[in-house]
Image (tube, rainbow, N blue to C red; front, side, top):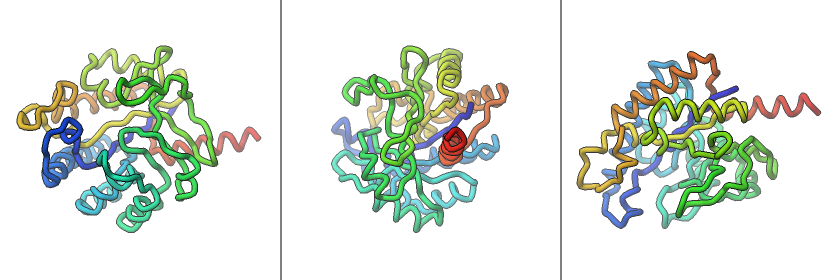
Length: 266
C-alpha cells in the first residue's frame, strides 16, 4: 500500500500553448521559486519523492537539481525539453542528468504524458516509465482502456498515474486544485485500496503564487490554490496518509518492491 509522489520539474511554458509569450528566464523563475518551497516542505515532513526533470532545466538550474539530490530524493527524466516543438531525446536527457547529478537515472515520464515507446526507453537504459494516465482528458489523450495497475512491457515497468475506483476520475495535479480536499482524499483512498499503490504527480510551479500573475492570463485550474494554498493542501494530504500509516517511497523503491514480489512468485 505504497504512496509515491512525483514532481515534473520543467520550463514553465504553459502560456506558449495558449499562444501567449513568456521568456525563458521567466519560465525558469516560476518553476524555480516553487521548487524551493516544495523542497522545504518535503524536508519538514521528512519525505522522499521522485523529481522528473528535463535536462534543459537541469542545465540552467544545476544548483536546484543538486539540492534535490542532497535531500535524498530520486531524479528521473522528463525528457530533454518540455516544449511542444522540441523533439524527444530520452537517451540524451538520461546522459545529461546522470552527469549533473551523479545518480543513475532509471525512470522516465514524457512531457504532457505523451505516448512513449517502451522498446526505445529500455534501449536508452530506463527501467520504468510513468507516462500513462489511464483516463480520458479532452484534447490530450484517451487511455480508458489502459490498465490502472503496474505492468511490464519490453522489460520496462509501466507505472500508471493513479485514477479513482471505479470510475477513473483523474487524481493528477489539476484535481487537487479544484476538488474539495475531503473528496480528493476519498478518491485517493479508493485508488490505493484497489491498486495497492497510489501514484500522484504535481509540478513545482504550482507552489509559486500564480493568482497575481495577471499578465500570463492563466486559467482558473492553475491559479486556484496556487502557491501557499497548494503547499497547505499537499501538506494536509501527506499528513492524512501518514496518519493512515501508508508508507511513502520513491518510484525506484516501489518498482524494486514490485519486481522482488514478482520474482518471489516464480
